[in-house]
Image 1: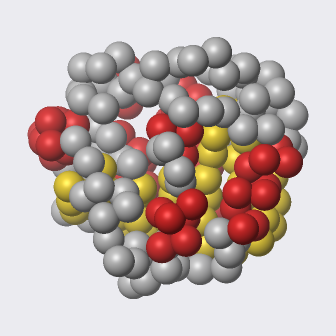
Image 2: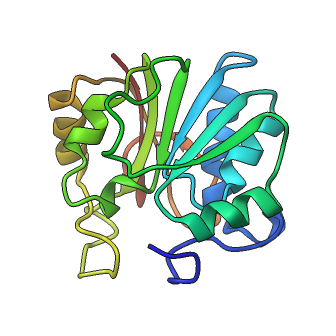
Length: 191
């Protein structure tokens, strides 16, 4: 998916990024231990990497789009961030040297996210998807599906992840809260 496909959050500062997207990364930044080494899977334009880096974490952002990564480097640069172009299923192992991985609003873009989820080598994962129970999949361009809570839990479980806690967001202006009944499902998982 290219930089100007309409699916990416494109703005040169966090003020131009949709609030719910930034809120997920701020939630992750607070949830992780200080100075964590974080892998951002499907980092897009890099705003989330910058939120994590500004909170004191070191981050590697991976994405498969050259143009989006160039934009990330130009607009969301930090000495604590490295951007790498990779197909998400193209690494033999993802993140063994990391404390945690984040994968926000990415899984629905993969025809089969299971190979990638199995390859994540770190011990903690924060992942989000659109909640099919409230945000119905109607053939949205660039999405292969949305997930109910049960489907998302089954996907993560069969890929070796144990969900510690559920979080959610209610609208595009919402902060992250505990629960699983909003339009976004967020799972805090461990191996």
